[in-house]
Image 1: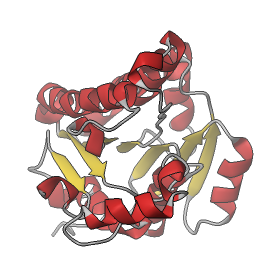
Image 2: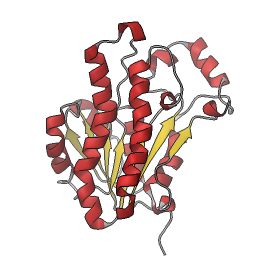
Image 3: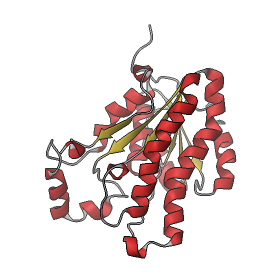
Amino acid sequence: MTELFDVTGKVACVTGASSGLGRSAATFLASKGARVVGIARRAELLEAWRSETTGDTASLVADLSDRSAIENIATEAAKPFGAPDILINAAGLNTREPADSVTAEGWDRTLTLNLSVPFFLAQALVGAMKEKGWGRIINFASLQSRRAFPNGISYGASKGGVEQMTRAMAEAWSSHGITSNALAPGFFKTELTGPVFDNPALSRQIAKQTCIGRNGEADDLNGPLLFLCSPASDYVTGQILFVDGGYTAK
């Protein structure tokens, strides 16, 4: 009988594994028996992650924003443990530019890393998943997939795109045994959300806007992530799971 929440031996490719929620996801999956390939551009932080993580891990230093390198990144990601069964698209960027000051360069960087990279990396990896008849794609959406926040127009546009892209991936690939879903975290303390948590009054205000009454902690994502990576979610695809303490319920 298949263990519902078992990812033992599965090969997971995690982008943004050097910090934040990507690092937490990579560490957690390794602790659950997955063989994890962490991808990021900062070599020192990637090696720090590996040295502090229990389980089978490998690191791949790469600039995901270079679209011409995506095929090679997919090839290299398969070398340590074989072709990935699970893709976690956790790398992200938020330039926090006001709408009247958005630059073409900032807009392009944001949409490239947050929206284009998850698609083209999935496209490059999905062939091997089809051969196995099983795969998991977990994208990172956001509160800004559905809510508008100040100085977030390019980030919100990219994360709104992630929500619809996740559904489109599900339509394209679920018949091959490959599910596509997204996690949409609320406010978690990470490098990306540093400006929020550097302001205690703002952090408290946001916590009060949740139903639970606090902001997120990294471990709060572990259960939802394991569910979407494991056989427990075999009949779940094209869905966006908000892990936000009820922020979007109010």
